[in-house]
Length: 100
Ligand SMILES: [Ca+2]
Ligand SMILES: [Ca+2]
Image: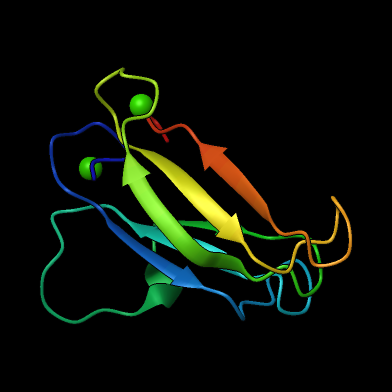
């Protein structure tokens, strides 16, 4: 999936226990490609982090061009998000493109 539209595939990594904004808010790391060798997520290009404690953002993540503009977009699951009710879960879409 090419999130930033530069023609190189990018790497998505769901990390449900990331505490960037809240405890176990979770998140999805994006590493812009080309990707090779060994690296650390501490140097990832983007972290899309959940703000709901225990939301577990990144439990599922799918990259696909949902709006048909030629750039990959992200569908991100948050299994523990309670905004819609106790343990209702949530899904977020992040539209990719140049400059993302
Ligand atoms: Ca790319
Ligand atoms: Ca798109």
